[in-house]
Image 1 (cartoon, rainbow, N blue to C red):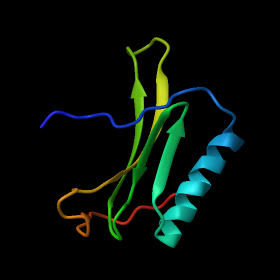
Image 2: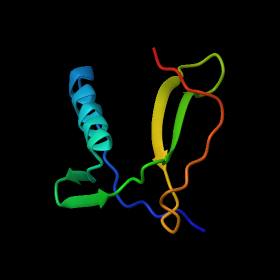
Image 3: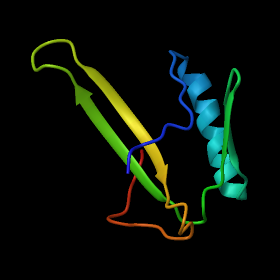
Length: 95
């Protein structure tokens, strides 16, 4: 099935601003509240289940030996038709 982008926002921000966004997401996950994303006229509200799949990925992109871009991605994922299922592998640690 093709991917449908429901919302996208990308811009340079201070680390403190990014931390604030992540704290809001974490607080909503803790309380079981929906997560609403807004930027300009775009908005989407998502209801993560009790056990979504959590993916963390660190990447280096670009040709070897030239300027490269580093990224870290945090992703929550769940099947709309089976919202209570969660996958799993080894335990994640973030320090």
